[in-house]
Image: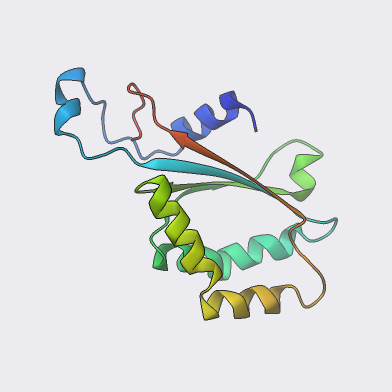
Length: 140
């Protein structure tokens, strides 16, 4: 995932709450961190991956303190055939770590993950990049 793509994702989310001026920075709460994740599915499994996110994963993420920002599908091959790209917001890197740990140990998630892979794995690779908003970003 390129930095240009990451920047574009932040701009495309539509969550801009207005620009923050230099004079108001001190009054702002601590900045969130963003996690840009790219999942690569085995051939023929992307639909199953989308179904798992659509039907279960987003809700379980929220349950564990992760904020769903945007979910995207690449438009061009070969990524369009097997990748899901999404952006989460966390209160901090430490909060992200705690959220992921709670998520991984959630009995509901374990059941969903097991059931969704009854016909084989639906994720073969996960890339994760933590990002922080720049001082001029409309999304903080």
